[in-house]
Amino acid sequence: MRFDVITLFPELFGPFTEAGVARRAFESGQIVLRLWNPRDWAEGNYRRVDDRPFGGGPGMVMMAEPLARCLQAIRMDRADGPGETAPVVLFSPIGERLNHAAVERWAAGEGAILVCGRYEGIDQRFIDAHVDAQVSLGDFVLSGGEIAALALLDAVARLQPGVLHDEGSHQADSFNPAVDGLLDCPHYTRPEEWAGRRVPAALLSGHHAQIERWRREQRLLLTARQRPELIAAARAAGLISQLDDAVLARAAADGPP
Ligand code: SAH
Image (tube, rainbow, N blue to C red; front, top):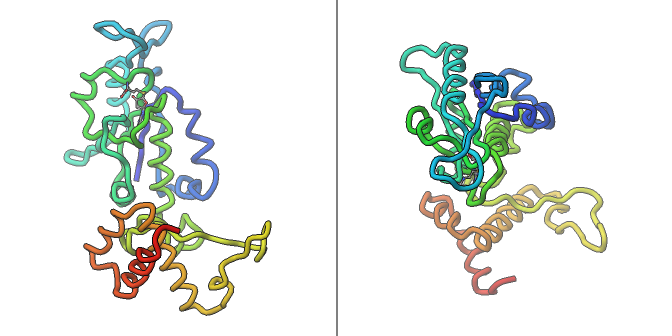
């Protein structure tokens, strides 16, 4: 898949796409990443990409024209055939909030053209003319879309085959609907005792079934406490067993820990 990113700060992308496990998806070519700076398509000696907002008020707004020319150059470079034009996605607090289901869709797709805003945002006419979808990272305001773009790219990268050392590893991660959509259980590593705290006995038992049972219980209890709506969704999908219900009922009777 190929992602083209329109950003005034392309240098922010290297540190994240050249480090850690996500790096493999970019090095292997599973994800082709191209960075485009709208400043390269801006006019005049100052290569201006922003201007003051009509109607007054604070801050600056990214101009439509450099973005449109940059987008046109990307379309030429991609040489997308008819009917296979890549979607243009703008990162914005007004967009649909990114979640696991959306990341899975992106991970299975052909890529996209990602637009990172800066300043107060970008001229609405560019959005009306060219943007197919808007994506938000959450209900807060970033100073630019780059962190949101990197969040999407990183989450998509780790779902590519062979990127995580252990293929089973994201099976057990939080939010995986292919398993149960619940939160992940706590993890422990050596030593067995640290600062007076011991690793839960079940994990040291060596009994596979007992370990799995402990992990399942932890996922259930943690999710019931932190994100009860995910339990409801798993139940609706038929992924909560009678044994699971017994665990949840016992915890509910005991009250909060
Ligand atoms: N005036 C805008 C915020 C602009 S912040 C508002 O209040 O809604 C500048 C840029 O950062 C935005 O254009 C967008 O690309 C990016 N950005 C800010 N918050 C974001 C979020 N929660 N999710 C995704 N992108 C965000």
